[in-house]
Image 1 (tube, rainbow, N blue to C red):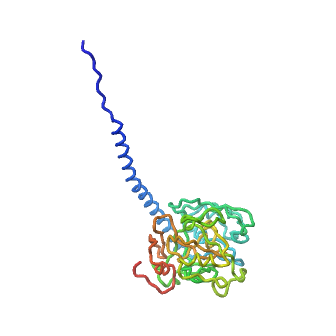
Image 2 (cartoon, rainbow, N blue to C red; image 1 turned 60 degrees about the horizontal axis):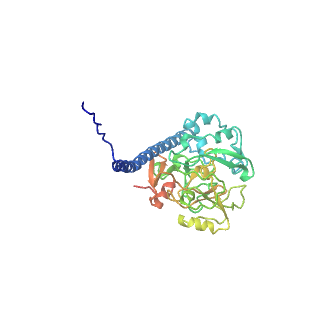
Image 3 (tube, rainbow, N blue to C red; image 1 turned 120 degrees about the horizontal axis):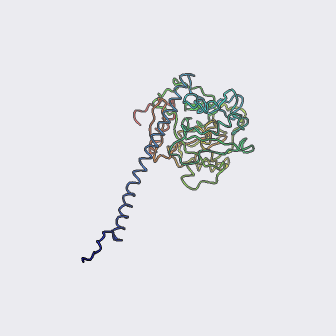
Length: 358
């Protein structure tokens, strides 16, 4: 009788198994950056498409009204009112939001920001997918204490997209009076007033959302510095009326943005930090829905605001670049290494500089 011998079984040795695991780990390490890059490319394309929709809505608005939307209209107050994005809502098919906005009523009562008037409290807290960059990783909702910190706390949905106030150089940040950009308080700029040409003038760009705290501590890293504003005490001679000349009393920005932080810190007007950048899409507060070309794109130098007016940079979570929508409807992906003079020239509507290539 023949004895049955056990059949030999092939298997990995421990060393072979470790080698296989190591190879898999190496492949994952090689493929992961490519996957992440592909995902970011998709997010970047989606972001650019959103900006195209916004600038198309601006064209439709201009066609209907023969002017671009103003930053906001003041009426008898300088407290702020409906932002450009609220005014553009009928032109980018946000029916759910349009039903919540009553342009026959004020947005809010009081200042900076005021207490929201019904039904605008619901609209303010409603996020718009069109105004959210897919690469933004921060919280999109803000709790804002109304009436300059003395009133109730209300909920706002933020925006990553902002409209061009101009260069911000010198006193061009003061949007109570005409700037060299395409909108300011009570502006009535039509395409015919953009004398540098629609293809040479910026309309919208991107902004990183601020930190959630209204008064954060001093930023200690690049993440916070790019999302936090320097707060300067209101220095206007009379806030109840507009100035005869732009700017605060004796406060003009240095031409070199690298001097901004030291210049502001040294001022007796410096009062700390603010975290409300982009905090509410519905309100025309300048640090919520506007930007200037004072800083270069993706600047690590903090923004600055006083009573709402100031300089606010274009920044994004896209590595090294920001989207820029021009007034002709085109969208460019602009590198952070762009020459600052060129960047500022694109921010001005009427400086006489027609750019051949940039």
